Image (cartoon, rainbow, N blue to C red; front, side, top):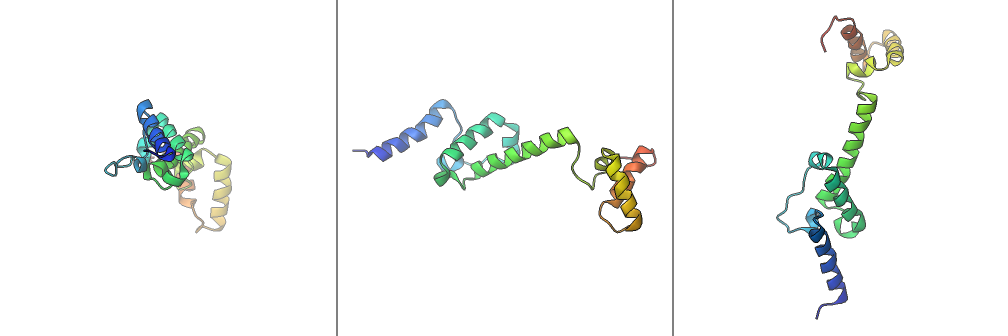
Length: 136
């Protein structure tokens, strides 16, 4: 005779499979390999479904690799979207300085006073690229 708790567990495990919802690796057989962060970043619907399952059962799935990868993929997607809206966010990239000429001007003034500051070369290079004196 099955206990009520066991019946509920079996039902909860069977519903996602019946609906075609991917089940995180911890809930699958032990031979399943977790999907990567980049895979989840490229598959938003599956990522959201896995995250819902993980949020619903953090006690069992909280440390599951698929749960962690799906969550990290959400962070990666947010960073991609922010970069697409604002351009590069890396001050080592000359494009960063080209996208903000006033910040570049301030940086170059500080670099003139203290040449060892971080990002001086990238700020200078952005001007050289714009002047056609350096390649990207």
